[in-house]
Amino acid sequence: MESGQPRAAAPSYLAWSIFNTLCCCLPLGIAAIIFSCKVQNANALGQSSAAEEASRTAKKLNIVALVCGVILVIIVIIIRFTSGS
Image 1 (cartoon, rainbow, N blue to C red):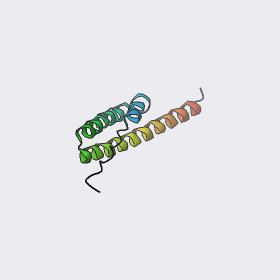
Image 2: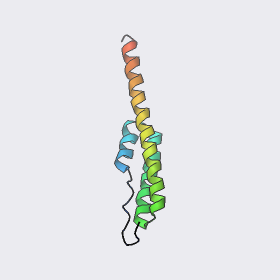
Image 3: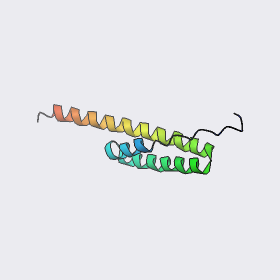
């Protein structure tokens, strides 16, 4: 990469983290919000390597939280329909 060109800011995934906190998995969502804030801070300070690392962690946490939320919804639906209520 040329030194004259600025690097693109790492994505923070903050909106996705908030969604996961409210709708899917509270503990993982909160952790994702923390890492999303770290991304924003590192981007603001120009620390691209720290921002990229925190961004990858936030993305992984969001994926796991979303999968947990979907699995939980499926389990609730199965229990609801198999209980004979």
